Amino acid sequence: MSGENNKKFIVHPGGVIQGELRVPGDKSISHRSIMLGALAEGTTEVTGFLEGEDALATLSAFRAMGVEIIGPDKGKVTIHGVGMQGLKAPQAELDLGNSGTSMRLLSGLLAAQDFDVTLTGDKSLSARPMKRVTDPLALMGAEIGTSDGKPPLKIQGGNKLKGIDYDLPMASAQVKSCLLLAGMYAEGKTSVTEPAPTRDHTERMLQGMGYPLDVNGSTVTIEGGHKLEGCRIDVPADISSATFFMVAAAIAPGSDVTLKHVGINSTRIGVINILDLMGADISLSNETETGGEPVADIRVRYAPLRGIQIPEDQVPLAIDEFPALFIAAACAEGRTVLTGAEELRVKESDRIQVMADGLQILGIDAEPTADGIVIEGGVIGSGEVEGHGDHRIAMSFAIAALQAGGSIQINDCANVATSFPGFVELAREAGLNIEVIDE
Image 1 (tube, one colour):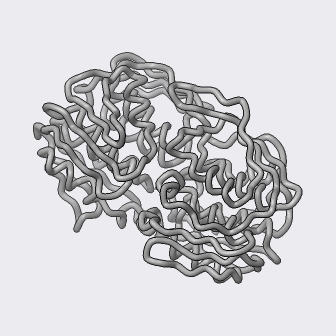
Image 2 (cartoon, one colour):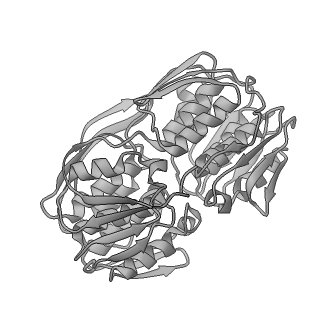
Image 3 (cartoon, one colour):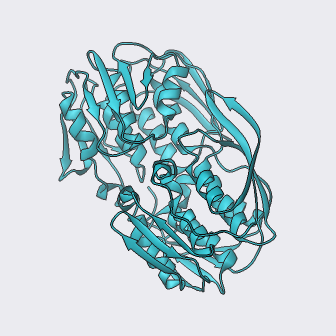
């Protein structure tokens, strides 16, 4: 899908971040709205849908399995659900591009269908670990072939799944969601216990669509054989995308930005808590709820940041936001230490190593560790860094230029469209001096 054509960002130093911005819809909720809407009885109408390549990969996969989906048109999508048993065998492999969420969640949902299907992805996705989902699915009775634990996933149809009790070895919303989706088709009950809280969008949406679910402490239990009802879903703005502008305003003197209608699900607000501990000036207003998901406007004004020891209980709540938080740490006074974040090494790139490499090129003392990083705040210089086809790396180094001594060139930025279409335009509108070179 993406990432083959090379795009470079050149971001010039200086600028302040100001105004009211609305970033695109939440990626996690957009994915799930298509998956559950497709399996529901009746029609599901979605507004605020993220028209990025990852969520569109999920949408295309369900179209290929016979689901009528109208849109997206300015964030509006109408899904004509086919019911729990209504999916049809696709004519070809399902190419999920760069989307780990699509592949991991679909593996659970498709393990129980009566047809064979193969899930493939781009070079980056093809290197990501899948045994974390295929192993527990095998315990349920699924048959899924991998290439040494990595994609493509060859899922055999016609297997009857049985419910299991599973203790997650790592905090992962994707693995939890995968097993819950498989559990809807399994005989008996499936219980998933997590070692630390992770995003609970799947549980909220299942309940919102009428599927019974029991949440007891860190254990979620689902029983097979119930059904989903179509509904209306208003997707909040994505806190992961809002993070780039939150950090940008926090590090650039004179900045004052308000991010509108952002999802503030308690399992996703690690970035707010961590920036708050670093001394950022953050306030929430207009707090309300939409479709079971809490939302608010987030205002960030510049304030000097200080280095901190990041509490390990916040790590799963901010796992996607760390590349941007590393930029905040680079601009803070003193040392920031992150531990307990091994998961960052198996994202779209090894985000610990890639961010450390780039920060070092820009003159920041950043030492990677097995499960985190140690960053000494300093003065960001100019230089040329690699985006490694990872959307969050590219956007993080783009905002670093606000405090840089010279221009920063970021290579391999084509994948920004996977999570944040329109990033460059919105960044310019907010005050970032960014240019794009297509090669």
